[in-house]
Every structure is written in structure tokens, then in C-alpha cells.
Length: 138
Image (cartoon, rainbow, N blue to C red; front, side, top):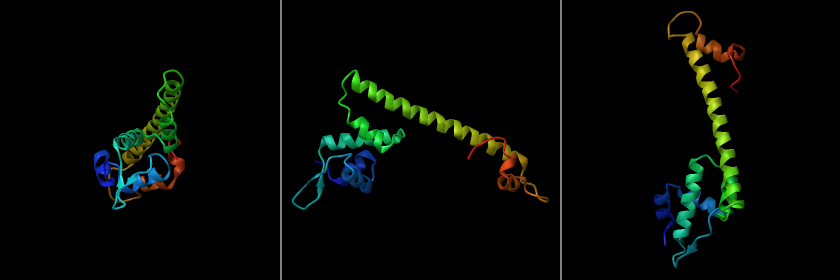
């Protein structure tokens, strides 16, 4: 059995987050010892590890609930898990594309001014006038 602190250290999930996951039903409620302290079993540790890894990969709590509800049956469950993972991959690719656009625009803006003195700062001018941007990034 694991205390909530031990569970936190083992998974890297903060104690308040573990309590929240328990509250919303992502992990089973802990048993309590005589001192009313939460105690988690190996299954709780593994479930929290699954959640942490999925969160690290950018999955939202709803997707994680869906994934955890699958029994791992080949065919139906595997297809559903694949669909969820592919949707997440598309979200990540869209974020990367957006970040690449931001990178290009910021690179362009920083080239406008080499930190010189005198006159009007071109970086501040560009930031103040969205029409000077080359593309959409907002």
C-alpha cells in the first residue's frame, strides 16, 4: 500500500492533483488506514502512471477517461484507442504548425531592429501594428 506522498514521488504527480483525479473518478477512491490516511494499491499506482504518461503526451482528461474505459480488446477497443491517439497526433501537428508560424514571424520582427539606438524601435512598431505581420498567428 502506498501513501499519497509515496504515490506522488513515484509518479511525479502532485498530491493536490492526485486528490483531484480521485474526486473526478479518474482513480479509485483510496482506502483509509486507522489514522484516516489515504492508502493506494499497486493498481492505483499503475493507473496514476498511465494518467501521467497520457497527460505528458497532451491528452485531455476526457480522452484519458475514454482510454481508461477501454478493456484492451483487439478490434473494437484497439480501433477506438487508435482513433483517440490519431486525433491527439493531429492536435499536436496543428500546434507545431502554429508554433512554426509564430517562430517565423518573431524571427522576422527581430530582424527589423538590431538593437540600435535613435529613431523608432521597429520591434515595438511591429508589435503595435498587426497589419505589418506577414501572416495570421493569433
